[in-house]
Image 1 (spheres, helix red, strand yellow):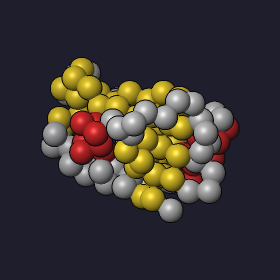
Image 2 (cartoon, rainbow, N blue to C red):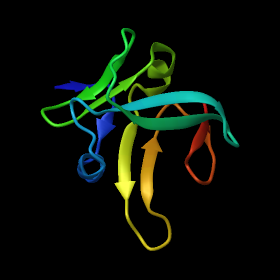
Image 3 (tube, helix red, strand yellow):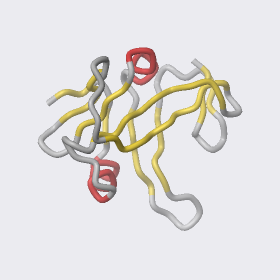
Length: 108
C-alpha cells in the first residue's frame, strides 16, 4: 500500500462508486486559480503517463499526480461528506496557510 495522501473510508467508497480503480485512476492536479491562489483539479483517467507519481494505492483504487502537483498534495486528506447543505469531496491540506470558504482552493 502506498499512502502519500490519506483517503477516508467515506471518500474511498465514493471513489469506488465513481469507478475509480487500479486501471481507472484518479488523477489529481494543483493549478493556479480559485479565490485563494491554487485550485485542485480531479479527473478519472485510464491512461498512465511516464511521469505519474502514485500518491495512494491499495488493492482497489489508485490516485496519481504529476510531479509538480505532488509536492502540494503530500499529506493531504481526501474526505467525502454527504449532507443536505453541501455534499462532495473535501481536501484537507496541512500545508495550506489559507483556504477559501468552499474548500476548493488554497494558498501554500
